[in-house]
Image (cartoon, rainbow, N blue to C red; front, side):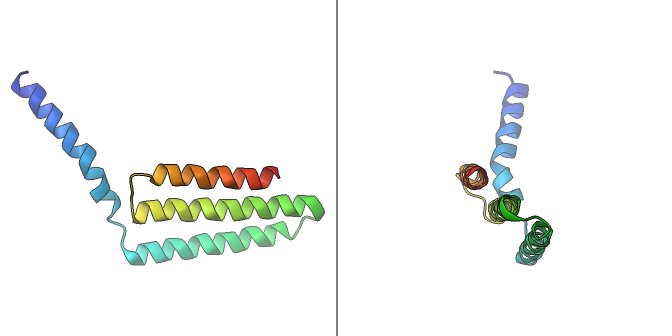
Amino acid sequence: MNKQHISAFLAISSLAFSSGAIAQNMSEIEYRAAEKSIVNEHKSDQLKCGLFADNDKDICMAVAKGKEKVAKTKLEARYKPANNSDYKISVVQGKADHAVAI
């Protein structure tokens, strides 16, 4: 290996391991503001569901609730990154899709 390959490898590996530090730059104030935004959007979605009746309303509510849970899980993953964050998001998304399907 020559010096260019070693330098490139070190640069790539340092960038790969620094992504966790970059993701943690979200302050608590930004987190709380984003959380309030998610809650307000969920309330808005619920009001829109009021326009429907019967089964359509149930489906709309399930979609709104699932959307809120997925958004909160993604926000939590941005605020406190973990090795299994992507897995948690996938599980919540799957549960939301399942709730709509039922």
